[in-house]
Amino acid sequence: ELFVVGSLNMDLTVQVTRLPGRGETVAGAAVVRAAGGKGANQAVAAARLGARVRLVGQVGDDALGRELLAAVAREGVDVSGVRQAPADTGVAMIVVEDGGENMITIARGANGLVRPTDLDLTGADALLLQLEIPVDACLSAARQARAHGVPVILNAAPYAHGLDELLPLVDLLIVNEGEAAALCGGTDTAALIALGPRAAVVTLGERGARGQDAAGACQVPSFPVPAVDAVGAGDTFCAQLALSYAAGLPLVQAVRRACAAGALATTGHGAQTAMPTGDQVERLFAR
Ligand code: ADP
Image 1 (tube, rainbow, N blue to C red):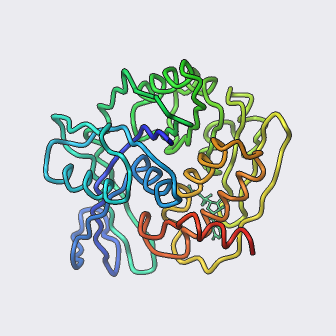
Image 2 (cartoon, helix red, strand yellow):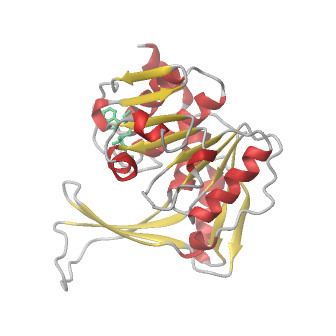
């Protein structure tokens, strides 16, 4: 079973013909609600890929929180570890211009109050973390996982500082180019490993990904697909990589599978709607 400790947001999206400027009001059509947040997205991606997944986090004790929980549960994720806290549900306000340019504001609400003490890690094959909950919460979860011999996988997104204590507890670090640059000044996996994790993977968008662990370094090209929207590709990549890594695949093979899953996520619009099944990944992989 994959344990995800992370964020849940309700994404509220309005499509407009042109993004507003400062102080300006622009009218759009309907507001579209969708479950989001990196924790929920990666948990749903892993469930779609066929894994048993438990999500630990917090929503508010409000209507958006209940809707969000139900949406994630419908995808087959065990949400019994998601608390309804006396706080507001995390919300991402998204304005998308025709053509794809967007503006996003996040109010992290209940996600900012996550305190994962006493995690029941019975049956956990791996712990997957992101940085949309406080770094202290990640640190606490990582310490508990290590005490239980459960591998710790960190997707250090969005970039946050103050990771000095966390990174040495990490078995596998996953970042994109921007996060890698913020962490170590470049996209060199050796420089990332020098910060403490046992293995590191950098995603390179349509150029694929590179990785490094004790066995050596690898560079994996992306799978050519008719990409329409890269939203959700990173989260899907992380979910597949976490599952393959936890299953004991050599890093290069795990990264190849993750690239196949990430590529498929770009072939449809939105984050969770475009996430592939395990069969779809196998088919692309076997081509
Ligand atoms: P993020 O969205 O987090 O910045 P990336 O853009 O690096 O992440 O994408 C994550 C992974 O998704 C890449 O490593 C790659 O495997 C896959 N991917 C992203 N864009 C494409 C694309 N246009 N074609 C094929 N695969 C892609």
